Image 1 (cartoon, rainbow, N blue to C red):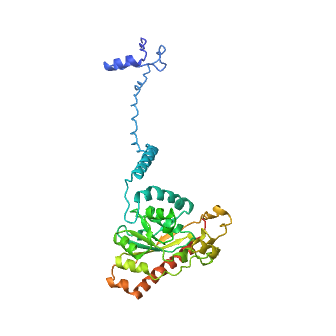
Image 2 (image 1 turned 90 degrees about the vertical axis):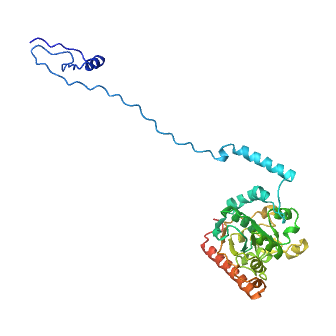
Image 3 (image 1 turned 30 degrees about the vertical axis):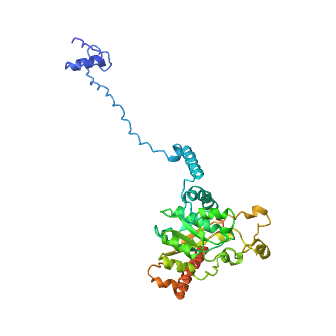
Length: 349
């Protein structure tokens, strides 16, 4: 038998032969076979499969930068310069009570907000009980030796209410007799605690805050903390009845301990014209440092509103009705205070 002709396997040539319909075979050794051996046919090796190029994964859409990451400081500086320009040129609005909304939002709230969030860590509950629009009267307990609770209440309402409503507090006449404090109180939207001003604000759709305990509440000794004092003659109820606006009870826990009042220098208070002169564990012993409040943990809870629009116009002159509604508001605030105190685990944490 004649020797079989061995044709070396070559990829390029095999492709060419394949194109002509021929199939090439090689011996098992790759170079042929010995004489006398039967020809062995090796299976044709499959041509290497060219892998497809990997399909790149679709890129995720770029997340838009936050305003503070996109020239935030430039915008803040520009906004601040624009604010100063309006202040200098007088191009800003105030209402008939002296309320300056722009100054309150950009300056006063910015100064008070870190104190409320970081220092007192104010927790707000029941903010949904405050109407989203229209007039309403928020009635709260008063404590703390210095009226910081009113300022924290103002921040709590504005920063936690979905409509970012501004609270217009009714303040004592002493506030408007002090230099600097007088101007700041007016600019922040507060006004004298009189029935005429309160009714005009309520009828104008404003959110008004009142603390009926007055100096009796804010200046009470530490031993009587969280015990509500007398609510006056119920003038706030009469005002709400005339305006037909709801009354929202409010309870504040945490303010009583910021300046524990263990004494009252009454003689010095009369000389200075103050309702009281507090003596605390740190004041006046530590001087100005003693005026720093203790970092207590606060809770502010708004109760269910008490409707007044269902009463006839002459109801505002009914002393028995005013007494009953005043007592109802006072009892609701006191009951909530006790409930919050039971739930509180620590004064500072």
